[in-house]
Image 1: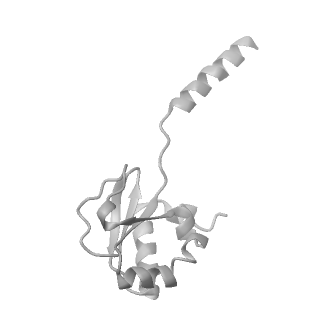
Image 2: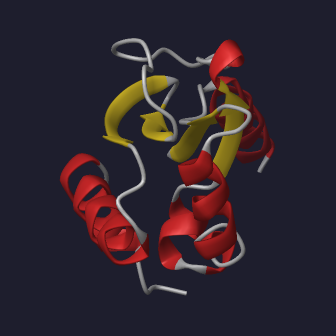
Amino acid sequence: MFRQVIAHAIASVFIAAAPVAQAAELVMVEQAGCHYCIQWKQQIGPIYPKTDEGDFAPLRMVSMAEAPPDGVSFARPVTFTPTFVLVENGQELARIEGYPGEDFFWGLLEMMLLEHTDFAQTAHTN
């Protein structure tokens, strides 16, 4: 019994010390006065957190002047706003440059998530 308690305690220390994988997130890079940024916020912003995509890759908005945010590395500089950068473990996986409108945005986002993450395995499991 004592050995089991010690073994469990040691295992708990190793589990607690193991690095935790960061989940995917969608970083929206915007700038003041950007018409398409405002349009996205009106059309998609209110519903994004309520979707499977928003649950899987929560949104973080940053200004172009602050991009990339601390702890995040972009593959290349952002030159257009809005730019939606899919990030996991602090590294860019893919991006959507510009806002193509509500209908096309969802399709592009889903393709990006399916191609670069395990979104298909986690979507609709709740």
